[in-house]
Length: 101
Image (cartoon, rainbow, N blue to C red; front, side, top):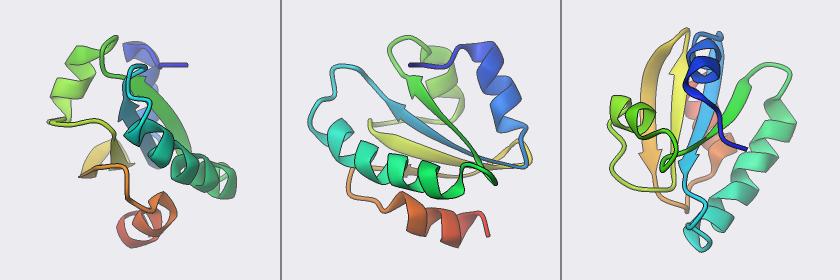
């Protein structure tokens, strides 16, 4: 389920947030990253807010973070975008450790 713009603004102001940017039509790479994203969400859900943005439904949000390809994962700390990592072959858990801790 995709987030709407209002929920997105609340989410990124959390102490730590991780947002997956993808599209419903992305059934190849999107499925690959989803496994890593869900694993990280289960591990860190009590300390980090997680969300999903459908770039086709929320184009302005995608533009606001400089999104160039899907899937991409955005890492936020206290409302500021720290890093946007593009591609399906990323380990979201390792990125959280490197970027947010």
